[in-house]
Amino acid sequence: MQRIGLFPGTFDPITIGHLDIIHRSLPVFDKLYIGIGRNINKTAMFSEEQRLQWIKEIFKDEKKVDALIYEGLTVECCRKVKANFILRGIRYVSDFEYEKAIADMNRSLSPEIETIFLTCLPQYTSVASTLVRDVLKNGGDASPFLPEPVVRSLKSGR
Image (cartoon, rainbow, N blue to C red; front, top):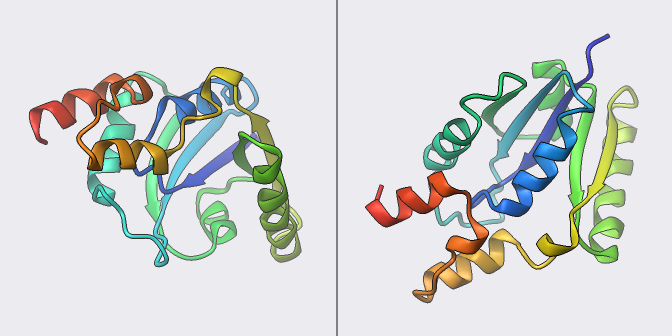
């Protein structure tokens, strides 16, 4: 059986913290989907299409990684792409409590899908999309927290 993972999130925008989790998870999976979830409770700064384009550009040379946009339950997206694992990144203990509750619910809905948690490296604990958006909204330089394709795109206005 192939080990197929889904890394769900809004990725608004994708950060170097996300890349840390993705790159370190690749030895675990035969295939990893980065799932841009539609969250009706959040107002995105960047369009889904822009976020998808960034991810596809970042991973254009990585055959094990693909990206998609999905709506609804994460476990339903897993079924569509035949993922048997959900990947989640953890920065703080409080993240774990929240993520464990979601993992327990997902397990109740789909016992065949397991959640795997990876803790981020210490240098990325403060890197969060929410904070990066605040820096961008207030005219600050968020480039130290963003992958190069995102930085280039923001500088060129695309």
